[in-house]
Length: 80
Image (tube, rainbow, N blue to C red):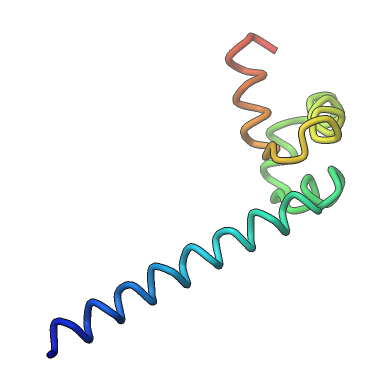
């Protein structure tokens, strides 16, 4: 009986974890590009630089699921 209860508890924990992750992803998609950039730390914004941030902001308008740090990594991979 104990293993059955712990299995149910684990299934519930997994389901809640998935639900919370999906809710965070959905909320993130609704943020404006400025809000996404504002969520970066001051150190991250300084590291990226104003010029790159303006390019990333334009990219976020076209691709709302994109994270600013992922956009930076993509820019670095193509040499930008």
